[in-house]
Length: 306
Image (cartoon, rainbow, N blue to C red; front, top):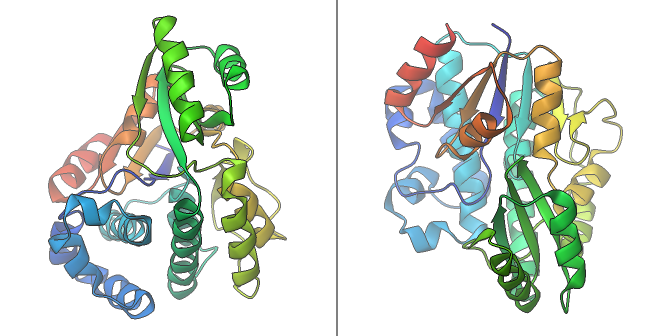
């Protein structure tokens, strides 16, 4: 069975995530040690003791989710499972880069530290918001975003029935009201910034300069891109790619379709929650989709894919 590993994005965090896997698998210890040294705080302690409000802060949520994804990756590899492809949702692309050998563990944590700080800084200086729109066509979403006062735009093409919009807080509120008039359900996301839009450009510019000396290798498996919605083949300028990634829409539907077309039969989400597993279910037919976030889900995943 040809498998792809998927990696969770921001918003999937919860207190205690990853702790059971870290306890069960000794191979997780170097990840926690390396990450704690680079981040400047005890990652396992943050995973287990932080409140939901603390974990929701970008400076902590990004390294915490990234760490949990790597713990799940380590656990499933300890059980002998391999993969033909990787993909991540937003932040998840960094776990995908590590999983595919593009980034060393140390450089991956360095990149996460710089990214989370740059994005938190940009969020604090803007007044942005995001909302999930359910059941609307992309053309309709783009039309309404273009009709409101202020800036609003699609940010995450998550599934055929869900697209996330982002922009100025007032513009998002206006767009939500217009969707409600059309009978479309909208859910405001618990974030304080318009991620994956032009409002994140200050973060993108700062981050690009900071990672210019990080070494990016060629992946050892197929790497699917949020930016293009297909397999990435050009890895010659990853700082520019990752800067564009911060302020461009996530083309997740395109990625899933491309992976299935390439023969991927099983999609395994590694990290907290099962958001991506749900998006696979809503997008593809005839594939195995499962997630790994603790020993119990790992056991179920192994039964499904082996």
